[in-house]
Length: 427
Image 1: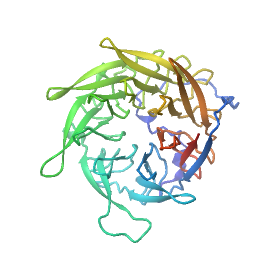
Image 2: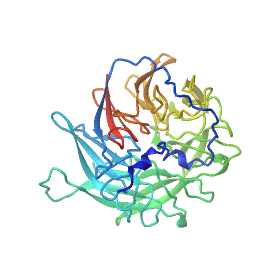
Image 3: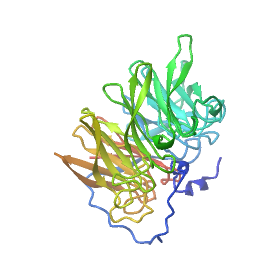
Image 4: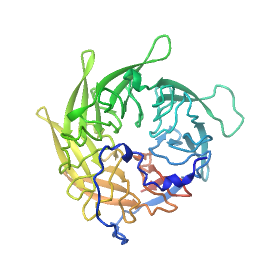
């Protein structure tokens, strides 16, 4: 098994792809930032990873089935330390982890950095960021064995839908989960690929005779952005939205983009280009994707920039044929410059309130869970939990999900017993 000491790295599996990291010269003090008053709620750890066959380093969020069971991935761990897919099943008094699949760094891939999702057929779909026949990642499907299993721990069967290869222009290194359209086609991004190796947006379509066919529907490069690390999302009209982390180093420090079906292809619209080198009031370098509400308004985050250099929460509204950005909250006020804000997408409840995580902000500089409450046109920021870096976890890199009772679930990349936790926050 890989030495667990590598988890001492600052949880920067996302950050490592950034071509330029601003040098920080501020000497970090040992004082603890005063925590904001949290709302009344209960935080609990549902599972603490041990770094063995159960996995370690859950770098992505969770997915919930109709019975309230949770599904996720770990970047490392599993039987061969190449990553794993797990299920947390809600028992009578506790949660029990079942390891559904351990990656082998063969044709199946390795190191999943994105969550798994349920497809129209009820099985799980996801991506591995490396491995596969082309060595730069796969899209896979997991489903229970058709044979009866007497054990309480029953591995699922994997099939690889597509192996990426930089040699054929099909992209490489997918770090986001795929999304389905209404016809059953899969869409996603890779952070490498294309003439400039700046990343692509792909479509996988099932073929009549079996298998899946890849089509590159957009290639990034130059001022168009680079490293599309944000998850894709559809609006009600079938348009796709996403973010890029960087650009060509002269005109873009990340973008928010729209892809619209146009004839036999897709037309890109840049919703916002964060200017190089220091971004703007809305931030820079978005890593998480955007979400869309029923009115078509987009909501997103940046981990850097803004007035306090600690990231932002923004929205984008279409008005008169043009997209207008609004700053909902600046996360950097009063923080040292080394503190990194959200690196995952937001979640929205039925009242339109927003929830998210920060990678290394909070009272103990180990990350936090926050809420942005809507009241008319104004927003109020509050902290729901500050991670201590101990038993409660360290550096959440994931988005959050809700259950039917409004409880929140997420993961931290490290902390807990050693190697990350799954947590719940109840109102």
